Image (cartoon, rainbow, N blue to C red; front, side, top):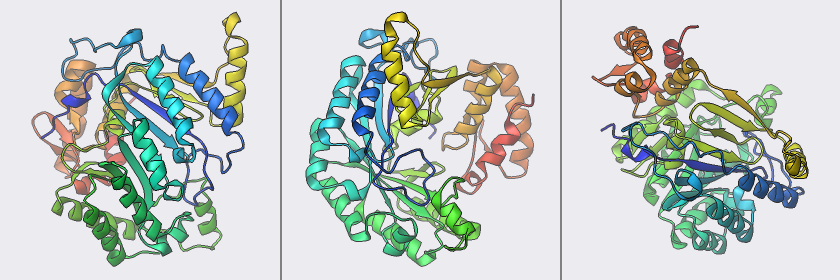
Length: 413
């Protein structure tokens, strides 16, 4: 069933915490392996949260009923249904520091009483006391970067925790009162094989967690691992192994009643990540912190990927506030109708829900829906794409080639 009514009238907030205890070898996200700038960063972050509260006032988009106005909270803004602390390692912040940020958001933004509030966490930063503290200040979803339950994999990835502590963290999370728990696992590792990957999945299913994010090991250009492999210090990544593990993953997930709702994400019924799913549905969100992105429905905006420059820009903005000449801390791109179409195709093909042809015609116009259907015909005939009366979507097998399929549906300029 391709029902997505729960995405109507959503808006989200993302907070990027750019600090880690150390850089993992495979990581390509922006972060610093130091907390030296933490205090100054938090001051700048709080200022941005307050200064940009007008950003979402245009209201979120509703796919099901475009004639219905989005419900507004106080301050004339749409209701915030999801808050997501990512990084970096957000769990490096103290409960007091995170609590202050949540309080500031609740003060300046109309947060829904049942909002999904997620924290990404690394096992090496977690304790039972810390997890209890997160529950007390309002977090109701946890995403733990386990990556593997085997120490040889963790060593290859340069993770700071071991397999025993990974399991302990899941037990602690449940004991602290979290029921909405997701973990990350990485497959296609040179240190693993089919048997070990199956055992990783056995452990996950034994915990009966509602959500799994599973990623093929990808060599990011600026990652330490990429350089080490090129230098012959570590064994290379095999695409064949990744494909094998992906097929195992899809089969095991289906056998255990997990919905494959996005290329890398699996969940029990109704337990998808509402925040991440909102990205794929084009709902507006605002991102705070260095390198964080925002989307208001027609344009994208992204902050500079430097803690130092982010802090300096926020300080200069505060100094010039009375003169109404703020120093830019971000870049902005206004999206054309053709770019919005391309983004819609690209993002929706990553998901179980797929491209809604009826919505495309109603919201973007007949020229886009006709173009999409015409260019999809040969892909459907070749078995690269699946189609029902109103949807174009990818099966498990087809999802591995989502980017290539999307490119063939992109608007030709």
